[in-house]
Length: 388
Image 1: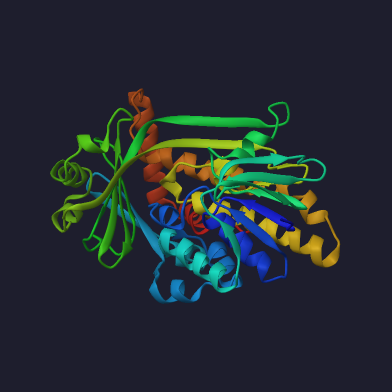
Image 2 (image 1 turned 90 degrees about the vertical axis):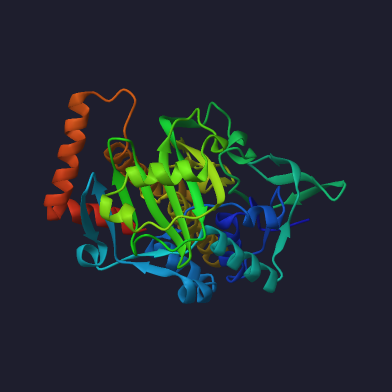
């Protein structure tokens, strides 16, 4: 098989890049190691920055998102029984959109199928060859071995994928911080407790109230890395969540059976560079953020923006400058998103080794954010998304 761009990973990043390039007449093949149903079964955050929304429209897949999403003009920060709102619209003139990652992925799959996009599922033993010269990709599928010759390979295959590992250790440098706790998340068919997200800091640990739609809520509590979802009954989860929320919020919380329950560890991770020869990394293949700032999917989208424009410039104008600048541009924005997510995580969580001084600093930081308009503007600018 021959294509211009081979994309490894059939999640939202790979699908979005494939869809955008297809609309410019650039040929792609997407390799996905799981089935479509498996990919659509992944439960992920659904807070979209304005830049991501714009990319969805450019890809021609924004109609259902516009019809079914929720626009959020702000978010609530709580500590104990005290709460304050940070108004994004007033501080920045912009907002975020609540639309589940599963729905983003479904829209992109439907669009790729409608346009005859080439997606190969259930691939195994994917190997990237000759990435610094004339790249090709080999893989097993449907009982046989296959080869794709291409101009470029794009790794959208996540932290555990083959793409980052293809770059030699002598070339790549990795930066990582593992946090000493996780998030226990519960999805329930209940109305959201509030019309905006609530980030809550308490003596018992962090909690987050989020939503997917008018009757589907997503809640999280900070938990030990040694915990298992099976250690938490629904009743225990709801009781703990209420203890970490302001009383007026806890009193109106509607509880119900969980339809999904999982624990996610928190990590900050970046690999440099994000290009090696004709291999490019995007999204979780290159960087991971703790979910506190809702930046995971959005940093992947900014990678896609830079790479998409670089590839279009190369194929349509015979100009490689955008590709040459990709890694530096993407990393400059990634590190700012990493900083914001790291700062929010430190602001709102309880750490096992936290001293009395550390707690006082955390309280002072929250007080400064509550009382200072400039601090709220900086928060809002980062939350709605820094410009590309």
